[in-house]
Image 1 (cartoon, rainbow, N blue to C red):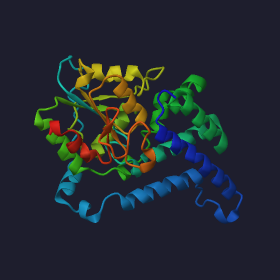
Image 2: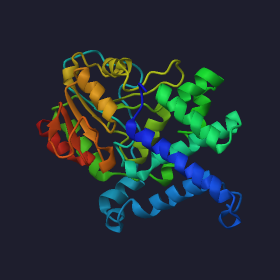
Image 3: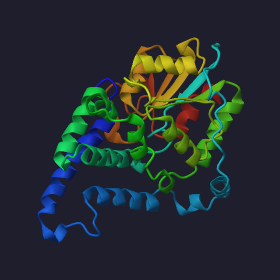
Image 4: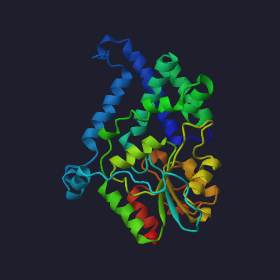
Length: 319
C-alpha cells in the first residue's frame, strides 16, 4: 500500500456496493438499462449531469473575470519542461493537482474508477465482480492499478493511460478558476517564493490538461509526474518520488519546499522527509485523517485547510 491514498481506497471499495446493487438490479426487468447502457454508463452519466448543473453559481458564470478567462485560456507554458533546475537555496511551492487544484466533489476520481473498471473488464475479459476484486487487490498491493496490470498482464501503461486518464471528459467538468489564478499569480509576483511546481501521481498529459482547463496554464514553472513509460513506477508517497521532485525543481534543502496535497499519506511522507511547510487540503469531513485535527491550525507540522484559497492565510509569509 506504499502509494495508496486512503480516501481513494474508500471510493474504490464503494464500487463493490454499486456492483452488487447493479447485479441484483439486472435481474429485475423493471430496472434494465436502456439504449444499450450498462451500469458503468449510467454512473458516468449521473456524474456528468451532476457536474454540469452544480459546479458554479449563475453569478460566478456571469462574472467578467470568469467570462474573460473562459474565452482566452492561457497556453500551458512550463519554463523548466526540458530538464531539472540548477540547485539553489530558493523556496519552491509544490502543488498536487487532482482533488487539490479542483474540488474532490467534482468526482473526477469517481469517473476514473469507472474507466479503470471498464478497462479490467474489457482487456482481461472479466465480469463486474472479478474486475472489481482484481482492481482492489492491485490498488492495495501497489497503490496504482496500472502497476499490477503491467506486472502481471504485460499491459502497456501508456496505452492504458489513453483509455483512462486521457479519455476523461475533463472539458465537460472543469471550469476556469479566476480566484485561484489570481492567488497563484499574486504568489509568483510576491517574490517570497521562486518557483511554483506541479507534483502529481498522474501522467504528464493529464496534469497539463487540468491546468489548461482551469485557466492556470501560465502559473507554474515545472511538473514532476509519475512516468508511465518507466517500470517499476515511482509515485508519491515513495521517498524516491519526493527526491525526484526536489531534484527536478532545483531544491537543495527540503526545508525550502512548501507542499500542498489532499492525501494524508503524502503529506505525512513529506513531513517525515523534512520538507518545509506542509498543507493538507481536506474538502470532506470523512477524509479528515487521524494524523491531523479538523480544527487545529497545525498538528505534527501539517496544516489543514478546507479550501485551496485558504493558502493566503496559512502561508501569510508568502503573500
